[in-house]
Structure formats: C-alpha cells, structure tokens
Length: 209
Image 1: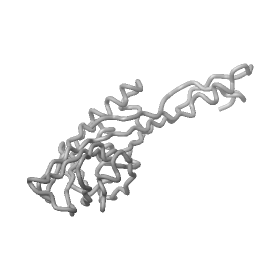
Image 2 (image 1 turned 90 degrees about the vertical axis):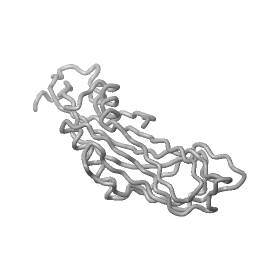
Image 3 (image 1 turned 30 degrees about the vertical axis):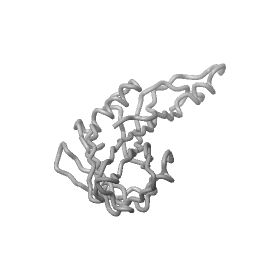
Image 4 (image 1 turned 180 degrees about the vertical axis):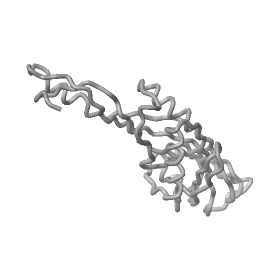
C-alpha cells in the first residue's frame, strides 16, 4: 500500500502568533491535539478470462502507521485515537476496443489475528472506460470499518496489524473470455485520521490557569 498525501491540521500556532509583540504573557504547559490525515492506496492489477475472480492485496498497516509517525517526528505513545474516515477508488489503466461494466465487493480481513473477512466496499455498474482517471468516493460498510478501526486500536496498544483487501467479482458485462480478457488496473484508497496529544508551551494572556 502506498501513502499518497499527508495533511497536518493543528491549532497550535495560532495562539503563539497572536501573542507575538504582546507583553506580560506567561508561558504555560498544555497538551494540544494535532490531527494527521493520511491516504493509503492499494493497487489491484486485474487480468481475467472469466467473470468469477478474486484479487487480494496485503497491507502492512502497522508499518504504514510507523512511517506516518516517523515522517512527523511523533511516536505511537502520542496517539489519542485513530480511525477510518472515508474511501474511494480510481481506474488507473484501461485500454480495450470496448467498455466493460463490473460490480462486486471489496472485503477486508486481519492476517495478524483471525478476524474477518468483512465487507468494506460494495461497487456496482462501474464503467471502466468512463471512469478511467476519475477518483470516485464510496460508501463504506459498517462491518469493514469496524474491523479496520479495531486494527488501529490494536496498533495504538502496541500491536502490528496486517490487513488483506480482496476484490471479489460479481457481474461483468460482457463476459471475459480467453481471447477477450478483462484487463485493467485500479486502486482502492482509504483515508485515515490520527489524533495526537502533544505537550507544548502556550501563552496565557491573563496569567491564570
């Protein structure tokens, strides 16, 4: 799985900036919340001669979260909460003389412990030709979200969760054949939010607690 972006949101610099040039202010130790928003994308290479297929992709979630924390110079002990907030898919490569329309589900399971598989995404009537290069938000299934969130809770507690996403085909129109194979590359993206509690010094204008 690859990380595509990191966005940090923190209300940390505002009181410091406002305090510049103001006298009589006291520094006070406080814990502030910092939000890391990160997107993890798993590519699926599809090449099938039947409409019945499964395509798995393993995700080292623990290692990915380690990298996120290292990039931002924070530690696992700083995490207050972490959870899955949204998902999307995008068709990256598709080149055929005709379109294909597909439907199915993406399941998620834990490989480090026995949990799942549970449905994470249900997709229907996806036109590969018309959706090439378009990032499409999806509704996430509650059972799959609960499994991912439990994995992140285990990570905070010291675990090293490993996930497996699996594309499970449903209907394909028209049916692939050995001479007309269904070939394309797409990716599923998961957006996660990590809430950190960081100790810092802020200005107290009034001098009280």
